[in-house]
Every structure is written in structure tokens, then in C-alpha cells.
Image (cartoon, rainbow, N blue to C red; front, side, top):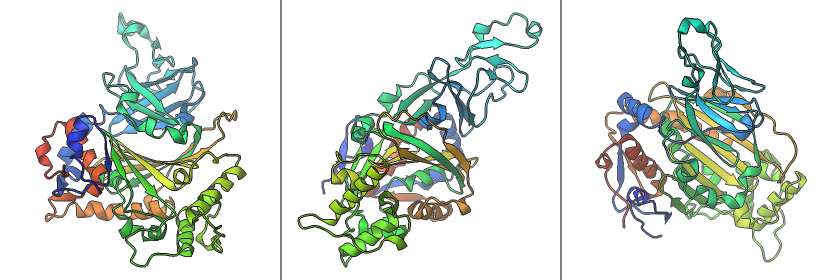
Amino acid sequence: MTATPDPGTEAALGTTITSMPRARTPVTVPASRYTSPEFAAVERTRLWPRVWQLACTVDHVASPGDFFAYEVGPYSVLLVRGHDGVLRAFQNVCLHRGNELCAGSGGGLDELRCSYHRWCWDLEGRLREVPSRRGFGALRNEDYPLPGVQVGTWGPLVFVNLDTGAEPLDEFLEGVPDDAAWAGIEDFRCQFVVSTALACNWKTLIDGFSETYHVQGIHREMLPMCDDVNSPQRLWGRHGKLEQPYGVPSPRLRDRPDDEQVWRSFVEVMGARIGLHDKTAAGALPPIPDGVDLRHVLANLVRDRGRSLGLDFSSYRDEQILNMQQYNLFPNTTVLIFPDLLSVVRARPGSTPDDAVMDVFAFQRRPPGDPAPRSKPVDIAVPADSAAFGLVVNQDVAALGRAQRGLHQPGLTRLTLSGEECRIINLHRNLERFLDIAPSEMTGDLGR
């Protein structure tokens, strides 16, 4: 295990570090960043209007006339697919008296008409109708275009940035799309998005999806089938990545699980990938031919499952099929990739520092060039106490409220982070730059 430079310093230089770094001294972060209304107000004015963030999926706005209203804090962005096929984004506001133009998502639009006083724009954002125009005097259409918002895509994901002077999405994402190009995520289509209000800060939420140090604590079912120790991490300037092997036991376990235990753990955690949706359906350990290991058998079962769905995974190596690739996109999105699975978690700020919204995007892979028309994803809101995200994510959700309540205790003034939590450290280094906060608010660094 190699010690690496302080990720904040390296990120500022735009370089990349790869490893599971050890800290020379612990890195600490003020707990107030997670609880302070003043800090949340600074994020609201300096972060969310200036940063690229995931808004929706291509499937939400695939056809001319489709629209989607993305909300983050007090801001609302309207994405619209024009009749010319171009995807555009605008601030979701009527320029008469501020009424929102659209809510939710839908299709079949020919115009953007305010429901309040019926001002109307075309799908390219050009004003075309003002009722009782004479009462306004010399009002020219060309003086009232809808305020534009930057929009870009990576695979099936649509991103927006209210800052029209910010760098393009391709530059913002740095090396992430190239690093993930092997997986072909453009072949995934979104099936549904589940949104859940949680009693925690948005950073508390996304932190839970930015490290696997907690697997030993709340995901112990994973330990027989997941190497949570030898899992290399990578940092770009803004973003991070974890690669974690599945189908092998954690070195944390004193008694090394046998293949039967690894098999049953894999089915309990990821059985859907091989067509087993219940741990009680695990059955006997599959035969393991001479010269191969259980990982190869599991990878072949995933390939077999793919063939039954019309998908060909024969070109993917065993490690590509069984090593989770998790990308943390600054500031608030986690993208989890396997050849047969794409899942995205997004954290959005709520009305107070102790509230957030978790959005879980679920995708299904389709054969390359599938001519079937895209269908709109189902968007649903579910209370936290009735959400069913699966074993692991349900455990994460259950832990978040406890984590947030602890952050308010007067004896906790700072969070203490290890090199294993370098993606959380990187989040805060980038927050400092966006919010113009002195780096001295964080102490400690990673050893050089």
C-alpha cells in the first residue's frame, strides 16, 4: 500500500492519484459543515448555481416535446427536447412575474406557456405571445428570451449547470467517461427514479456512498463475498472512483469463508444478477471445474443470465463482470457500473441542513442499437420508512438519520477521516474552492 499526496493539493494541480492511501495524520472536517444554516446558505448561493449536476436521464427527454423540471434547493431548471431534436435547458421561470413554467415531467409540448397570465415561449426559448400586449408599451419579443442553462450528456445521464460561463461538461467530468468507456453505459435505459426524503444533510447522504469503510459495520452480509480492503481508489481533480472485487471474501474475517459461504453471500447481496432474487433460492454451490475458481463460475452465471435477456457479455473479462466500478461525481452523485448493471444515487439539499432528498436511478441494459422506442421512466416519491431499495441500500438509509443526529452533539466539533475515506476528503477540498473557504478549516493531510 503506497502513501499518496494530499488529494486536495493534487486535485488543484489536476493530477490523478491511485491507491488506497494511508493518512500521515488524520484529516478533520468541521462538523458544522453538515449542520449549520449559515454554511447551507453559502452552498445555496455559491455551489448549486455554479456546478454541473445530474438533472435527469435521456429517457426523460428523448422525444420532441418532452420536458423535465429539475429542482435543487430554490432553483428549478426546465429541460426540453425541441422539434429540431436538440435538448435545451432554461431557468424554469416566466419573465413576466416569476411563475414556474412547468412542473414534473411529460411530453407532447408545442410551446412553453405560463399558466398564470399565459405568456408563451417556443421550445427554443423565444418569446412569441404576450396577452394584452398593448398594456406593456414597447415590449419586444427579442428582449425576453428564457434564461438559458448549460446542458450536456454522458451516456444516458443528463447534466445541467446554471452558470453559462462554466466549463463544458466534458471538461468538468475530467477522465471519468474515458475510464468507464469499456462498459458502454450508453446502452442502458432508465426504468424508474425513486425519490425519498431523509433526515440528514445532503453531504451525510452522499458520504455514505463515497466510502466502504462502513461495510464491516452495517453491511456484514457482504463480507464473505466482498474484498473491502484491497479495493483501489482513484481521484481526479473533482471526482473519485472505487474498484471493489466481488466473489471473494473480506480479509477482515478471521475465519476465511469457504466457497459455499461466498456463494450464499453473493446470492443474498447480488443474486438478481444471476436470476436469483431471494437468498432462499441459492440452492447448492454450483460445480467449480478444475483449473478455475468461484469468481469465474459467478462471472459465467452473469453471462448466462445476460444471454437469456438477449445480451452478450462474452467480451467482458471476469474482473470486469465482478469488480464494482463506483464513480463519485462532485458534488452529489454516485454512479455504480457493472456490464449488466447501472445504478445512480443522487443527493439533493432539503429545506434545512438536516434534510435531503435521495434519488435512486435504476437502469436496464438493452442490446446495442436496440431500435425499440424509448419509454419514459417512472418517477415516484416514497417515504423513507416504506422504501425498498434492496438489502444494502436499505441498510445505508437506516444509518443516515443516526449519523446526522450525532453531528449535532456538542462534544463532536470535527469529523476525523482516514485515507480510506479520501473521496470524502476530496469532496470537501472541492467545496472549499467553490465556496471560497480557507483550506485551513480542514486539518491534516495524506502522507507524501
